[in-house]
Image (cartoon, rainbow, N blue to C red; front, side):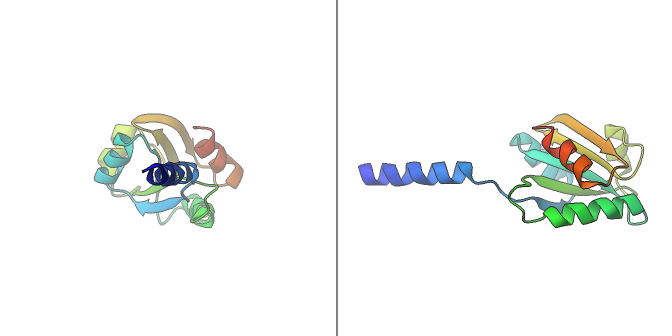
Length: 126
């Protein structure tokens, strides 16, 4: 019994200290609600295919994909289709990044595509 408890304690320690790499997914209201309910860090990227700044941001985000030093979830929102969400969150421009911890907005950035600014928005919010 002591061995089982020790093994479980080790698993919990290893699991809780492991950072999960950045995961990039398409936006869905259900996914956002689930992430917010679990108090997980989640960012919304309001992206438009025609936007050069959005494409530059996307390159930075894709370079971080799978990198455990950049943990969290990035939900890509179609700027042209998600009008209700844009209105609700008062998003006025494509290339907007909004970072949440639970249901609380902790950072917002628009129009920036350099790695330093994007990292500060995401990591400065922890």
